[in-house]
Image: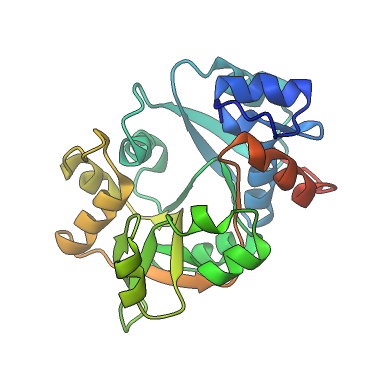
Length: 256
């Protein structure tokens, strides 16, 4: 998001927030992107939210603590002291979640309402996998980016076997169709926290949620029921995504 893009049509406010790299606060019309995600969670019946943020993200905390009047949601913050990966971010929310099941998702993706409802109806851990062709046909993500997304491999009982990160062409050709993409839309139980604490650093020097999930499957015996959905996820990764996402979400009523 901080990378310059002269082709991206940004207004002055969007350019200023993009320069900070805090994608959740990118303004779409008169509301930050995260408001759209949160109002969809509220529509799905969620009431308690924990935002995991870095210690430097004062603007995010100030907006939801002091400047936003909340009617349907209560929002608290957990601090991720260092940006050490997605599993480390999930682990930061352990005190908030306790022993309850909870949803975990990216703050730069807009997931469909049906995804939250499907996860809420799960009896245990699970995730939503999104069909690649539906993402290409109805989403905002170019084919060259989609081809690099992680693929979920599901067993005959409909449970996740593994997630294949950044599959190469040979691996993709060996997988049965349709291909199901993981967009980090999860339902976790308390077993995810010891899993997050048990994995080593990845080659990128981070604690990855995919590694924690695989540990939970292989070592702890956790089963993740896969909800396979033919629906797009809007992705706000770079400056070139902003105008497209803004157009798709235009007119949406925000009620937090």
